Length: 476
Image 1 (cartoon, rainbow, N blue to C red):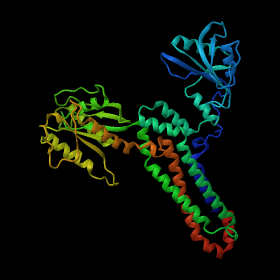
Image 2 (cartoon, helix red, strand yellow):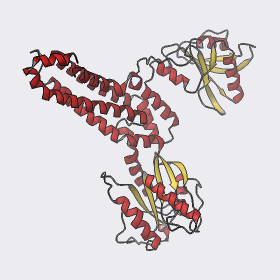
Image 3 (spheres, rainbow, N blue to C red):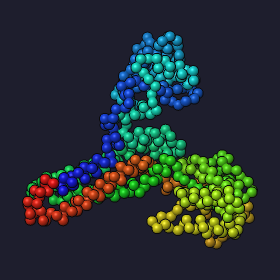
Image 4 (cartoon, helix red, strand yellow):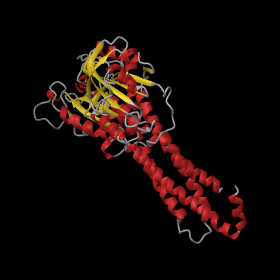
């Protein structure tokens, strides 16, 4: 039984934060073909002023000398102007800045070289072909430079994920979150949890090995139990908030819904700043769900334009209404749009009763669906009119035609999306399902551990009365 207790603590201590998750020490992982020297264009495709070509591996120095012969290697980490020539024909290729990064003080931990050449396709192609002709060099696979940095302990796995997110970041919030993860905030959090578990493991081992000695301080097991309890709470908080980090990385689902001719498509076009949807005074123009990724107040979102909610006049529109209702159930945030000049119509009243008011009611789990009620076409209201409807829920006035009220809507969207996606400045967020999987496994192991520890407290008085039982447990 004691051995089982030790195993549970060890599992919890190792589970969610193996070295490949949050530490920069060598992972022991050997990248495929890691003995070869690789090269690739690192600055992206297309014409540009300057293109950066990198190499990594033991033949990087030889490659640099081959293209800049007869010059010697430049000083480490110092940019030097060199004439690049084809090592086979001696034909000049470009005049470029070159940098030499001897390992392990480089991005990958290996010898690296960089060629900052002019970004024309012919120049880039010529330099790449010249590098390919150097013995021992081959084109890099996708992500291979970062994979080698991970294999050599230059980046932890969470930092690698942060780097990937930073490269693909499209909004300000995504950039802030990715940069903080690349800087090691999530890894530091995991290391703190690891230290807590290591201390708990030491206390439990001390209790197992020296529980009958007088020199063991009181409450060792209680102290371990207290630390494990606090850690369970911290893990639970992060797991409950994990969906926010994933929304921040992939985008919150924002659904624009309302009765026909309320201005839903106009609002989608206004927020996306492009003509995503057809706008027409004819009711029922939108019959399918149109989706577009947008940057809303610095947060990523997938904006969905839906069919007007009414009794369909034909099978195609009925299918559009069914899809719109399904999207409403999946939405992270609903933008409910009504015509401010037509609030008394049966379609508007039905939408308020079936969508807006139910969304404000709490679910059985205590939460409520997030919804912003937008009254469009405010430019059609009489001047100075503010008493639109006595029982109308909290709302925002907007005119998609003039843009009046857009700033207020964007500010409200920013608050809602910050609550949905989380604020990167408040602390690390779990942005991937892998993070959730490991932390949930750790939390399960800690639950089993605390159950075992509670059982040991009840068993302890009887063990002192029957010392031979302790011997049996020691060999269990």
